[in-house]
Image 1: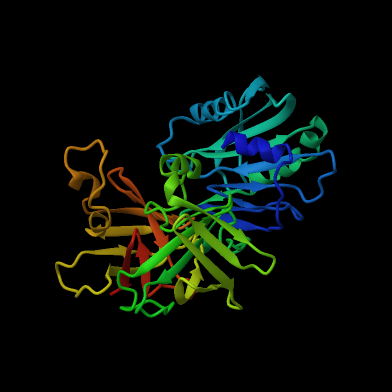
Image 2: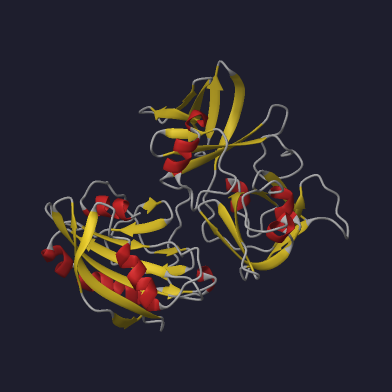
Length: 401
């Protein structure tokens, strides 16, 4: 992650326009004119008025996975991450306490890195809402840029609000979550003989296929069952390189997907989806899947095609960010191995807690400490509904009962 931040700070990546937004359980107000790409699990921001010789980037880190210690320990961990990634910390100020406008207490420190033969000027801020760390940092390649945008970074941090449901409170800039990620694109289609309806229903069955097209020019014919929010693409490519294909997009937006065994051609349509037209297959619609980041909804869901009754396996979601799992996770992930428990039911058994959706990943945080990330998909039409009629978790469709 630090190497990625340095590449942005050193001006190696183009950015696209953005605006005020909600990121996970954070509402934040960037200064007017700033630009923002969606980049994996962390959020990056840059001023829109950078000079030709200036570089400045702000990162808002994804919520940490492990329970946090003290704020001082979190700040120390953040600084240690800058050592050993082609950079080294060569100077650092003492920590100082900071406070957001909403009252959140954090710690901050500034310092200097040596990276790629250049100095990078860094300010780090760490908070601990609930029991997880949240990391903020600014990186500048010149002292002048660090001074020029120091106040803007302070304003960004000061504007942050942490909440369970950021969209539930008015008077905050509910900026748009990108409909489709810039680092990957999920495409959903259906098997031969099944309806290509985008509304949910019994026509889904087991014949759903989810492609994952990555920004680095590779793709998978089956999206990761654990979702994309903490997905390590490079590690997965190393471990199963034969599963990955390559893709190209021409000037008309036509997407060509290749593996040693298949070739598919997808044509963009007016509704932003794709239509497959090639000699190897029938015509088929490929739906572009929204990330669903930040989504909260309510309803009880059972497996598609299953009859409902008192003993039916189900999962219930509530709009306050809580859930109750009555055996669904055990159904989706019955064969999980490599866990530190004596009995698999201890890992996958029923329970309740809170949930978060980010980058097509539903993370279930059980009250007993278990955390289960699962691939989560809504078609565009389902995503437009307040409470979707059907949801796709792992590799199973569930209908609202």
